[in-house]
Image (cartoon, rainbow, N blue to C red):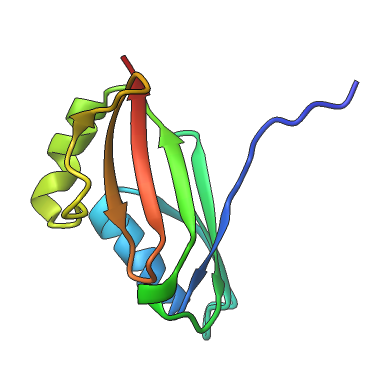
Length: 120
């Protein structure tokens, strides 16, 4: 029987290399691939079991509607790691939500909102 084993969101980036660097430096992801090397149009990054692909697209970050929800274990430790890097969204500090999740959010260089959450 066929089985879906992973979901990999694809999100836009005005500058794919800059986006890869941001995810590595700010969120602790690792570079998986960049294609082509001399003028990146597509890239893959990963952290633990989560993978995100970035594709070249002219986008206005202020008008982006792209969002990703990443379910994590150890949310408080992750928040303590990421918060000093200055990327927590002003409306997204770590908090207990009414739907039973502890969450925080960041906005990447191109306006994609990434919400990290852990069930209580």
